[in-house]
Length: 506
Ligand code: TNX
Image (cartoon, rainbow, N blue to C red; front, side, top):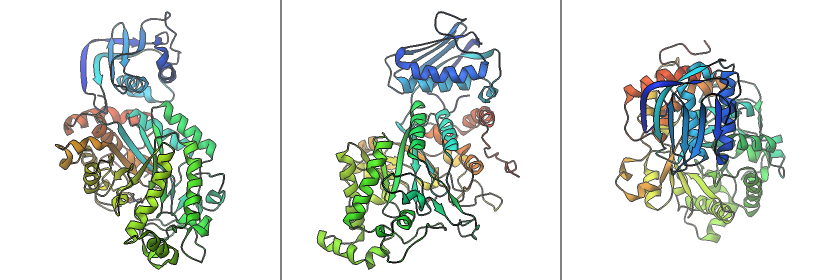
C-alpha cells in the first residue's frame, strides 16, 4: 500500500510490534536519517526510540552495496532492517517504513503506545534522479511555514527537487542585500486579478523571504534529501524588478508591480549595467542555494520592446545578430558563462532553445515534447514537464464548479498516465539525457495554501509514481494504494481534492 510503488514489495507472515522501548541502531554515516526517524516515530509512539543495546527489538539502518538512492527494507518479528546505498536511500526506506504504519501515525498528535508493522520485504530505487515540483511563490506568496510543510509532503512522496519560482511580473520574493528595493517595492502589489480574465480584488498582496528564511528552507529541505533549485526568471517575467529599478527596463515612464496575469510586454533591457545587476543578484543567490542547478527562466519573453529599443537594436548590430530571438539567446548565454564559471549549471525553459542553446544548459521542457527531444539529441540534459500532463494549476474537471477553472482538464488519471521519457527518445541513446521530470504548481489563481492542497493533492501522489516507479502503469492498483494513502494525507492535514466530494471549504 506504498506510494510511490516500490520496485519489489512482498508481504510475509507475521508482524513487528513497535513500542516506546524499541531501539534504533544506525551506521554513523546515517545519523541524520536516524535523527529524523527518531523524531517521527517518537512522535507516533509517544516514547523515544532507545539507543542500540537497550530496548526490545530494534530498527537498524545500515549501508550496503546499492545505488545511493536505493534501499532494502525488511520487517520481521525480531525487528526492522533498512539497508541503503547512502543517506538518501536510507531516508526513502524510512519513508516507506512510515507508510507501513496505520494512517493515524501521520497525525501530529501521534497515537501513543504500541503499533504493529506488517512483515514485508521491499527492494526499491527510483527510475529517475531528478524528481521535482515547482512552487510558484511569486504570483501568490507562500509563508515559510507553508513551504516547509510542502517540503515534508514532497519528501513523503520521495521527490527530491523543489524548484522555487521566486520572481515574476507580479512579485519578487527573495531578499537581495545589494538591491533592497527588489523586495521593498517588488514584493508588493496593489491588488490582484481574481480570475485569468477576472475583475480586480482591490486588496494588496505581497511578502518575501529574508536570506535567513531561505537558509532555513534550504537546510530543512536538505535534511529531507530535497535540493532547492531557485529560479530568477529573465529576461521576461521581470516587471516587479523593473518596478523596483526602472533602469532595468526599456521605458522612460515608471511601472508598477503587475496586477494582472498573462504574458506582459515589459522585459529587461540588454544593457551591460542590467547584466551586471543580475550577475550581482546571482552572486547572492549562489551564496544561498548550494544546488548545482540554477534556473534563469527564459520563458515567454515578448520581444516587442526590443524591436522598439535603440539600445537593443544597437546591441544586435554590434553582435551581428539576425533577430531578437538571437538576442535573447545571447543574453541567456551570458548567464550560462557566469554560472558555469562558478561551477553551476544553468536551467532554462525550452524557449532557451530558440536562437541557439547555451552550451552547458539544462532544458526544462514545458511545451510538449518537441523541446525535450531536440535538446536531448543536441546533448543537453532535459527535465520533462509538459504542461498538459503535469501542470497542477490546470483544472481537475470540466465545469464551472471547479474553484480554479484554468487550462485543459488534467485529471488524476491523466497525471498518472504521464510518461517522463518522451516516446521519440525511448529507443534513442539520447534518452539518457532525460534526467527526470517535475510537476508545477503555478499560482496565478491559487491564492491560499488550501488551494495549493486542493490542486496538488492527490495529483502530486500520482506524479511521484511516474518519476519514481517503473514504467508499467496499473490504474486499478494505483487507486487501491491511493485509498490507503489518502487517509495519510488527511492525517497530516492536507485538504486534498475528493474525487466526487464537495470542495473542502464549502
Ligand atoms: C506558463 S511554464 C508559464 C507560467 C504560467 C503557467 C500557467 C512557464 C515556463 N511559463 O508563467 O504561470 O504557464 O500554467
